[in-house]
Image (tube, rainbow, N blue to C red; front, top):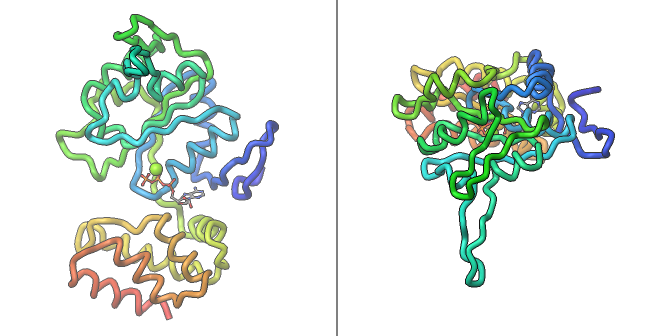
Length: 270
Ligand SMILES: Nc1ncnc2c1ncn2[C@@H]1O[C@H](COP(=O)(O)OP(=O)(O)OP(=O)(O)O)[C@@H](O)[C@H]1O
Ligand SMILES: [Mg+2]
């Protein structure tokens, strides 16, 4: 199958396009077959969510995605009793629903979630594969189709938010980075509609900006921003304006850094 062109699987489901970086598609498939949980590590905008969407659709599995935040507690994932017209009824949370239906549950930015989430995930991510629902007294055994996928960005991690080794070591892990130049050009061209010859200097500029990480710039230009930039140019915006709007302004608020990046851009983009 051409991974770049959106395809349909047997059930005629739309499969989001995804260009593999390495062996990650095979690894995902094997992890799902062998019922192993998966951890995706990598910077923002490098393709983690797209990868999970692509794999879930390719395998024909329902996908539940939860964006974790610092208020997200275990009960937000498992469920809670709610008042409905005078009655108290149990309402499954997204994780419980996903376990019941035997699909993929994707917890994005897992390190953001509150500590009690680990208590729920641990028995689900070792060979027990169970989800105890304390409040209802039920213990769900995950069906073979169920898979837990979590992601986090090690760059944003601070000591307080690090994943505990006992959590980390329950997952098979894949490190995501930005693609090599030629592959990134193909993706940005495919996603934006701009031809590869006009995308190439944008990717080269992104490489120059990425090389500044740590010294002047804290963030790296993501593939996502490159796609935005190319889309603006494809819609008729001048390249330098698009670069400013999509590759410089989102990257820094510091006026000196901004000026320095504009100078670098002038040397690359005509
Ligand atoms: N390998 C790839 N194949 C196809 N498109 C890609 C690929 N990698 C990145 N992209 C493009 O980059 C965009 C951003 O990717 P995505 O949203 O998956 O990033 P992410 O790693 O989940 O970021 P975040 O950590 O911010 O959630 C996608 O919408 C897609 O256009
Ligand atoms: Mg994402």
